[in-house]
Length: 96
Image (cartoon, rainbow, N blue to C red):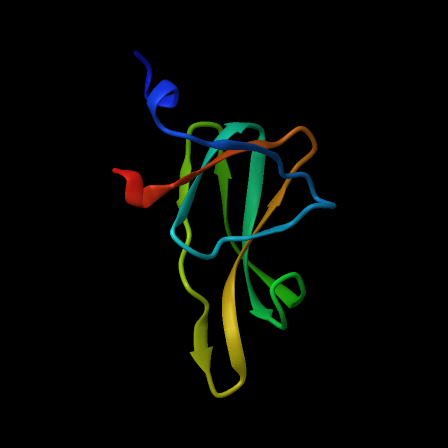
């Protein structure tokens, strides 16, 4: 039995026009492609401010969600922006 047969997940197309805030008790496996990770000001659940590049992830890498960091200037979080053809598998990392 494979890991993905026992852990529920959601497949996400994470291309550049669909950026994803990496928040909450979730994790994302890069199934296909590549994504760039940025730090950004979180304006609301779906809106972010300007982006500052941090690093990139590729097929096989895993990202963990974290709560936005609150500072005097507001809240800051991590944002994943996939390249064309990028697919992520999203799952709840508390299931381990």
